[in-house]
Amino acid sequence: MLKGSYDVTVKNRRLQYKFKIYRNITILRGDSATGKTTLIDMIQAYQRSGADSGVQLSCSIQCAVLTSDNWQLNLSEIHGSIVFIDEGNPFVASEDFAAEVRKGDNYFVIATRNPLYNLPYSITEIYGIKNSSGNRYQGTKRLYSSFYPLYSDTVTIRPQLVIVEDSNSGFEFFQHICGRFSIPCISARGKTNICNTVESCNAEDILIIADGAAFGPEIENLLLLNRIKKLGIFMPESFEWLMLKARLLEDSAIDRILENPSDSIDSSRYFSWERFFTELLSKKTKGSYLEYHKAKLNPSYLQKNELAKVESVMPPLFPTNQ
Image 1: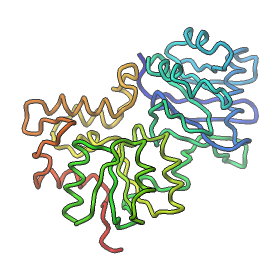
Image 2 (image 1 turned 135 degrees about the vertical axis):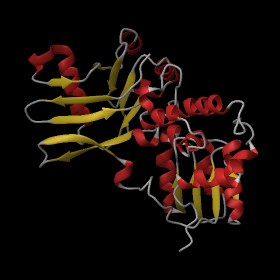
Image 3 (image 1 turned 30 degrees about the vertical axis):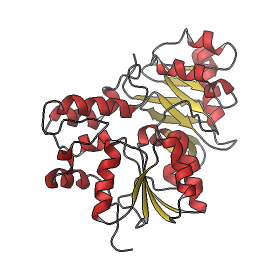
Image 4 (image 1 turned 180 degrees about the vertical axis):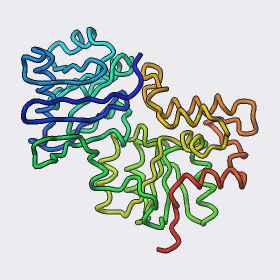
């Protein structure tokens, strides 16, 4: 079992990397010579030789590097650690590796240029490495936040169409909101169908609503569609997270969990965070007028006061000044 967030500092005489790991899967992206391999080489040097390597590594749990050589055997001996994997290790795309990640014994930081469709990683846990302080030091910076505003306060288009990943309660909720603005809303019936749905529809201005907690493998292909469509994107952790965030239930325990979810989510039980939030919402509302069922939306969530609370924690989805 591993949960919580971890600060990591790796440095030698020339370079210093400082970053924080929040979840079981973190993705490092970027072209060659951006520092991914250097970081992992430094960790591997420290793993082999300790302080004699000239590298200092600071973290409250062990950090290790995993390579393709006997990766399953070597991984079986690593527990409660942050495991770093450099690009060029093809096993990271395999179902066998996904099964190992699912066990939850470790957190994984994976350098890769390709999406890993077997792993449900968050769009907020995809990072690039950016040089700072005159290239003397390096630190991690979210890659997507530098070129696309995934979480701006407003959606910058007034959509002709809304496409929702969900086909159950989440879809019913957003379909209701869209109906108030006479905007068509359709379900993609799963995250892997969103890009095809965007490409096949006639609308040009489209708002995409999906669970950000597991959409990482799909996000790059979706953003590429901005070449042919004008897309707005709203990706909370999950629909259930949004309901919890809206404080429909006055529950201080929920507030504490949402303040730092890493401390409460056991990655051996929850491969991705949206499953945790679904279980939490179901548990906290059981027996109440807001009792939640994923398959069909409880009409209580569409009452005036409840809708107002949810909309207060969302960006305006349908700007009126366009």
